[in-house]
Structure formats: structure tokens, C-alpha cells
Length: 234
Image (cartoon, rainbow, N blue to C red; front, side, top):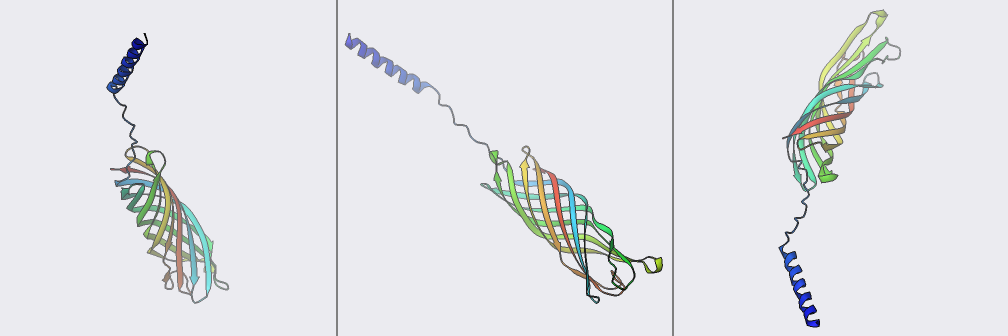
């Protein structure tokens, strides 16, 4: 009886082993990661905040004032991904209406004057460096920086005896930009972004009577922007 039980147990054990060997193995689930590599282009829009520093050289007088407004434009670039590190290059540009008007900039003892400024366009060429994070690496945190340019307008309106006299300059200014932002892969091709940029442009001196009827004027412009964008990756 014991022999029969032992033989039966051995047969069942061998049968179970053979059955398990015949069962197909379940393949491990492969995690699919988002790819950020490739060319992309898109549109952007947001708000900007300008700051002007005016120094009237011969009078040794300074004026400063802030402005604001909106802008809209586009961008085009390319990314290369290495693991969770993404490097890239981008060119962007926007039409804008950022500035302020009717600012008191009267020289003490001189005629009443009102100043205004406007940034009508700006753009940059920049490098980018970022790191992916989140589910399947579908988000990108990045910094950027590079060369920047803008189209600027500076005006000063004098009111001698109630008769306005307007002088001003229109100039293309250059400088640099630094930025930081986050992008999210909305699908295999569509990318949303939120970004902050700080532009700082070189100071320029404009000869009389460009901004003052009695003094050459040195002007320095800064610009901060917050924008959202939507891009398409090829």
C-alpha cells in the first residue's frame, strides 16, 4: 500500500512539473518612454513687463519707469535626447505692444515733458538644456539662454507754452535673454509649454534732439515675459 502511494505521488509530481514547463511564460511589461528628439515648431503668447532707465548726460538727471502689454508670435527648434537629458536650440520671435505713455519726465527748471516707450517686436536665438521627469518621461524642465533683439520706440513730448513738440527715436536694440520653463507632451506630437523669460538689452546713447532738447540721453531697456505655447514635434 505504501509503495502504491509513493508511486502515485511521484507520478503526480512529475506530471505537475511537465504541465508547468508546457505553460507559456508571460512576457514582462515593457515601459514605453516619450521621445523628445526631433524638430518642432509652434505658437506662443503672453504678457510682458518693460523697464526703462533714462540718463540725461549733460543734465546728470535720471528717469525710470515701467510698462506692460501683450505679445504673440512663434518658435522653431530642435531637441536631442540622451537618457533623461535633453539639449536643444531654438529661435523665437513675437510682435508686441509693451510699454507706457504719458510719464512725467520734466527737467527741473525746464519745460514740461512727457515720456513714452514701446517694444513693438522682440525675439532671440537660444540654446536649451533640460531634464525629463514624470510618467514615461512625459514632462521636461528646462533652462535656456542666448542672444536677443527688440524693436524699441522712445518718445519725449515737450509742452512749451502749450504747443507740443515731439522728438523720439526708433531703434533695433540687442542684448541677451535667460529663460526657464516646463513642457508637457500632450500626445506623441503635441507639446504644451509655460515659460518665463528675462531680456536685458545694451544701453544706447541718442543724440539731441532725439530724447531731450538740452541733453544727450542714455537709455537702457529690460523686459520680462510670461508666456504659454503650443508646439508640434515632427
